[in-house]
Amino acid sequence: MTATIDTQTTPPTTHPGILAWVTEVAELTQPASIHWCTGSDEEWAQLTASLEATGTFTRLNPEVMPNSFHAASDPTDVARVEDRTYICSVDERDAGPTNNWMDPEKMKELMRGLYAGCMQGRTMYVIPFVMGHLDAEHPMFGIEITDSAYVTVSMRVMARMGTDVLRRIEELEAAGDDPQWVPALHSVGMPLEPGQADVAWPCNDTKYIVQFPEERMIWSFGSGYGGNALLGKKCYALRIASVMARDEGWLAEHMLILKLTSPQGVTKYVAAAFPSACGKTNLAMLKPTIPGWKVEAIGDDIAWMRIGEDGRLWAVNPEFGFFGVAPGTNEHTNPHAMETIRKGNSVFTNVALTPDGNVWWEGLENTPAEATSWKGERWTPELAEETGELSSHANSRYCTPIKQCSILADEYDDPRGVPIDAILFGGRRKTTIPLVTEARDWNHGTFMGATLSSETTAAAVGAVGVVRRDPMAMLPFIGYNAGDYFGHWVGIGKDNDAAKLPKIFYVNWFRRGDDGGFLWPGFGENSRVLKWVIERIDGQAAAVETPIGHVPAPGSLDIDGLDLTEDELAKALAVDVEEWKAELPQIEEWFEKFGDDLPAVLWSELDTLKARLGA
Ligand code: GDP
Ligand code: PGA
Ligand code: MN
Image (cartoon, rainbow, N blue to C red; front, side, top):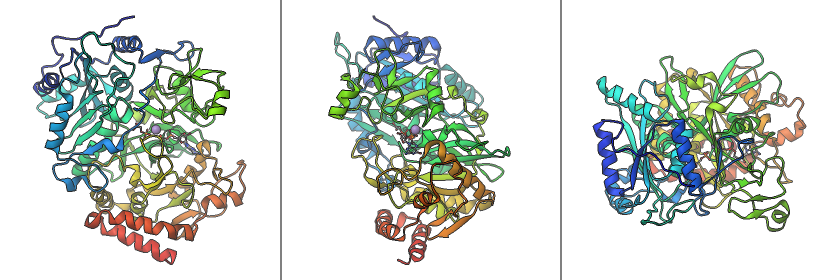
């Protein structure tokens, strides 16, 4: 089967800046053809057919998963590559102690060498996209150039893209505005000789994921996977946008956004920052187990938040799809995600393929008698028992349109966003961190965020299960000096009316008991924690003051109908002074990294914590 993509000799825009950039990139990378993406259904059909032809995609059984595809990556290209990710600010100081840095001119020279001729034999796709709404006051445009049809198809799910975006840029330009757009260049880094057959997952051992913050520009090379390659997501909406947000007084955060309605019909909006693979998507689509409560999703990964005219913090989700962790997702843990996926129009990467043309992963119901693993090998439950071989990579993903989510809140389509009542910070910690703690005030909440810690996961290449500081769940995504970033958070508190800002909480669904099991059942039961949070904000729920903040008073967290005793709950909520004393040197060491760039108020928060712990 062969399939070709329509390529144009006449570009569909006369915008001089865009044309000049596309021409420059084409001259450098030398693609066989150029395709300007329209975002149409026909284009999707052509692209997915061409991906089937190269063996990248296997079409799933339309009876079970319509218009959906399975892909398996190269086994070396399965997650974000943090050690290959750079913030190339002009001044090294501006990248701070948490980012890799290289002089921008040196990096450009190095990467121009890699990009030279790198698209030979391939189609170059030009993807006009917008993060957030096309009709926002200042639409946040981007243009991704990529030589990957897989990336192009995934971008169509994850971002609003296509001809409409070009038209809007031209329209604003004609009206005398100067619409900015982020140039985002991506190549898998595997040119094809004439006649050379393609592989299912082209990539290169040499990888660079580079942000140039001053120029608001992204260059990515060598990887086709997720956050490395879908440049609107982590690279733009977090790394570049965090720099824009610093300069313009807003926040670009690694947060889900949800709408919570109580049995009395009172509505609240919650944003929550957890590191990658620590529960954002699950919480965003949570199905409450407590009667009468309702959760609607607005976003599962990224929140852009601005202070509104009313002094409140308003959040939008700039994305258009879900890029969710597959393993562990099932009818019990995330029924809404399952329902969203079943509507089809999705791409599944690095999960298992079943003989009846469906997908499967660890933790999903109906374990198949046999399947083809993400590595393309025969997999059976019996073999797995023997060898421990997983059918799906731990960071395997579903990529699904957000509009298919039946519990998507109407406010998702409002470019003004929603006013946030509570911000939760959370991580994955076996010990020390209670189920929920309320911050005393904004600065204390900023301290909680700045000292957030979590065990590493498969979402990034490297060791799994190692505790590290992951401030505001943004460690891999802060596009500038993290000391300045903390200062920016402190500044939001200082410059605004504290009474109108969200209240800040710290949660941990992952604390374990002596038997190694989770102390808290999690998932839908997390609605009980959300309920306590809302009742705190409304002055209804009781709390006890501890050295680290306010935790639920006995009886104030609703465990009605839950198979959990007050004693077990007490373990999940416990503040162990000795454990916290052991945490202090780690926090101190973390803060010392930032030298004079760390806001003084964070040192005084640490002093307060020490004094309260009697340390
Ligand atoms: P995200 O990357 O932050 O969006 O994380 P996900 O929501 O995709 O979840 C990552 C992993 O954590 C999945 O394997 C989930 O099953 C698991 N997880 C999510 N929420 C909970 C929870 O409340 N308790 C427990 N024990 N695991 C959870
Ligand atoms: P996430 O990130 O785990 O936060 O969804 C995905 C990625 O960056 O590839
Ligand atoms: Mn997620």
